[in-house]
Length: 521
Image 1 (tube, rainbow, N blue to C red):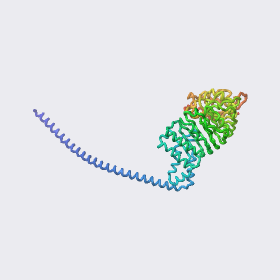
Image 2 (image 1 turned 60 degrees about the vertical axis):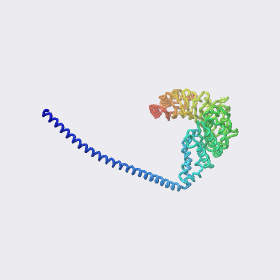
Image 3 (image 1 turned 45 degrees about the vertical axis):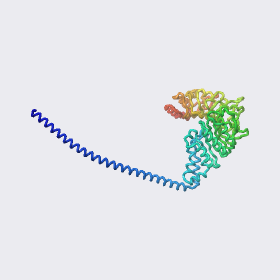
Image 4 (image 1 turned 120 degrees about the vertical axis):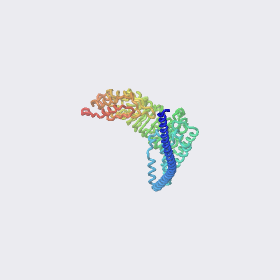
C-alpha cells in the first residue's frame, strides 16, 4: 500500500476517534441534563400535588364562608323584615294585589300568570312575621288561576293544582276573587277531567265572592260545566265564557240562565247558552261582547237589559231574532266583525244609537245592506276602525260617514291573520270628487296590517290631495253645492311592517307643509 494511502486512512481513523470522543462527552452532558430535568419534574409534580390539595382546601373553606355569609345575611334580612310593622306589611301586600296583571290586561285575552300565582307564597316564605301577616291578608290569595293544559304537563304533580286551589280558597276567606281557567285548545284525559270537575265545583261554592271570571273550557267538554254560573254573583264585575273550539256546544240545545249580577260592567259570551230572565236587569253593564253566528233571543234580552247603560258593544253575527229596533241611548262604540247589521221590515236600523262616535267594522259586514245603519249614525260617528280584507270599492259604501275625522286600520280581532289593505284604497280616497270624508284629519295603520302591493305608496297621493291643494270649499258628500271645507291630514301613522322608508319620509314631508293664507281663508 502506498504511503500516501496509509496516511490518509490513519488520519481518517483519528478523526473518527475524535468525533466519537466528542459525542460521548455530549451524551454524558445530555444524560446529566435529563437527570436534572427528571428531578425537577418530580419536584414540580410534588409541588403541583401539594398545590392541588391547598386549592381544594381553600375552595372548601371559601364555600363554607360563602354559605355562612349567605346565612348571616338571610338571618339579618329576617331580623330586618321581622321588624317591619304589620300595617306597613299590609300596605306592601296591597301594592302586590293592586299591581296590574300584564298577562290579563283585557277580559277575554287572559293568560295564566305564573309569577302572580307564586307571589303570595313567596312573600309568606320570608319569615314568620310575613307569613302571619300574609295569611291574615285575604286579598293576597285571591288569584284563582289554573294554567293551560300544555303548561300543566311540566308541573310536578297534577293534584298540586287542586291542592293549591283549596289553599287559595281557604286563605282568601271572604275577599272577592279573580278566576282564570285557561284550559284552552287541549283535550283532557280522565285524570284531568276529574281535576277540572273538582275545581269547578269548588269555585261554584265561592260564587258570592266572584269579581273577575274568565273560563275557556277544553274541547269535548260538556255544556253542564257552566251550570256553576247559575248561582247569584253579587260581586261579579267582569265575566268571559268562551265555548270550546270544537263547537260541540253549538249542536247541543241551549239552556241555563244568566246569574244575578247587579255590578257586572263587562260581559263576553260565546255560544254558552245563557238566557237571562225576561225581568233581568243589568244596571251596571257597560261593555257587551257576543260571539255568535246568529244572535238570537238571548242577545235581544241582553241588549234590552242594558240599553240604558251600555257604552261599548261587540257583535260577531247577525241580529237574527231582533225584529224591532232597540234604542241604546248611551252607546258610543260599536264593533261588528261578522255579517251586516240587518234592518227591520221598516227602513229603520235594528240598533238605534243616537250618540255613536266610534264604529269598528270587519270587512265581512261592509255590504250595501249596512248602508241604512251607516246613514243612521253618520251624523255622530267621528272615528272609524276597519279590519279584515279592505278593498277600494268599500269606500262607495262607507262614504256616507260625512263627519268622520279619524280612520284606523288594525289587526283582525281574535284571529292570527293580518288585515290586508288594497293600496288603491288610498288612491280612490284621494281621487273621488267631491271628497269622501272631507273632515278626515287622522289616519293610522297599525302593526298587523299588510298592504298590497307591499311597496304601495298611494297614501302619498292622498296627502298630496288633502294637504297640497287649495283649501277651497268642496261639495259635501250628499251633493249639496256648499259643504264643509276640506280638512288637512294632521296625523298619519304608518306602523305596519314593510312600509318603504321613502314613503315614511315623504309622508313626513307632506305633513310638514303649512297651509297658505289663502288656503286658511
